[in-house]
Length: 131
Image (cartoon, rainbow, N blue to C red; front, top):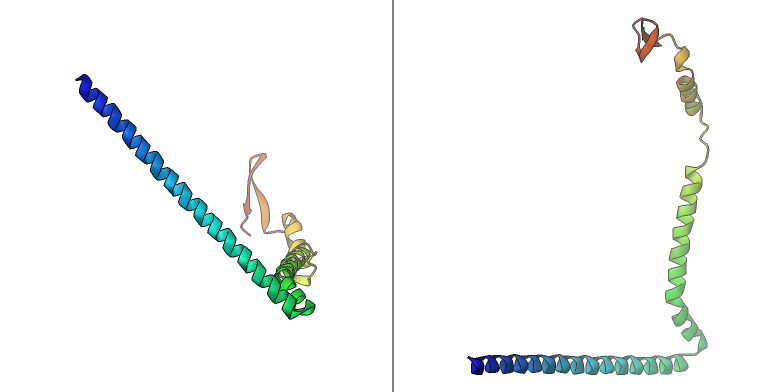
């Protein structure tokens, strides 16, 4: 029994060791991949710098400003639309139809067809009364 227990513990240690080796190899591959990506980015920057030198300052400026410029233009249009919408939303509306509707709503308690319905001395509900 003791021998089997020893073999089991040794097997567990061996599997743990293999697991750690596998994780280490994965980390090595990840580091190699990251280094390769950094080298690729470095080469791309070198090529872009060389192209910019050959193209001249105006072409380099236009190339460099295009993306941020379009972003700021899109943001400016967005803000302008939001400000215009809020400005329109908070403008007082004074058309003749709105004034007429407001007058009717405010003075509806004085109309002959809208009266409180009373039961005895206490008013219980408000509704249309019959003419």
